[in-house]
Length: 413
Image (cartoon, rainbow, N blue to C red; front, side, top):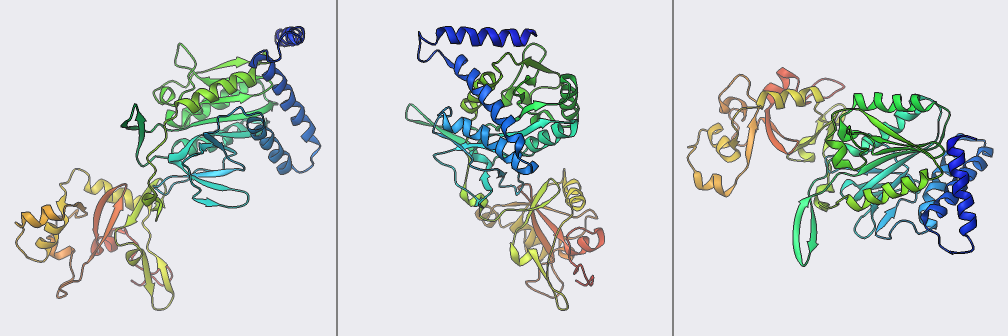
């Protein structure tokens, strides 16, 4: 009998002897039974032939465990199916198995029969469920799904009411846990897979915990203790992790950590207006045409409408070129372009708004912002990139291959 098996046997024997003394002996006994039950259900589902059906069943076992026994406070909703999390920047997570969200305030951005989309401002955290760690790829795929959630940015601050006072504070990013019932890998192989992933990603995308129900759990390590709260993990610079073997209490340890994570995640900042029309995406960068669909859609006489896109490379070039340059009030910029006096301070204060103008050759604004001989012919695109406004003249777009101007089929503007 191994040490772990001996410890579990002692727990079971003690629980059996205490059974006639207490109706509720404490979570230790209850979770010992819950853990055994989950592992039995895992084995029972092995009879399902289709891998997808087995995976769905095992995902449901964990979801039902939380909901059926009343273990999660009602203020926290648990997704009834897999779902995605969306940021107002236009980015979204991969498909995630269990999502914990604000039951009182959250709305669905989009709801299908088998999937639901939630705003990131209302999601406390997620659990990605794997039946079994069969290879390092299985581990890393689960960690990448978690990272796709943890990297999402929230759009605002949390509003809390304490003793009648309204307090504004930064909302904390959510947590992500990778859960597996079993592993056919050696413990050290799982450790190495996690550390390899952590070495390739910033600490803001690291998992809060990795749980293998019949073996133990793993969390990041700061040199003196294990860390499982998101703010603590964000500060880490070393990819060290620490594991705790299963002594019949793995599920209880996992549950205890989950409750602390839920309690320490501050939500808020959701604004419906930020989700009315999401930005376009190019790689990790989000952008918008300031004049909306009027500028976003091009029209070709031969091929019809097309989407005017900006590549990630072009977006970076626009940002890098304008970085360090002075901004200018947009009304003042147009005054200069049209040859009007540029000293109408009252108008500039009445209509504030600073813009970056892409002008690497330092051309006169009248030569790049307006069409000659057209009193109202603006010759630039106004693009919002990561919250800043950039004016990109058509002439530079054509020369430097920035904003798509030509029809992608016939290459005519």
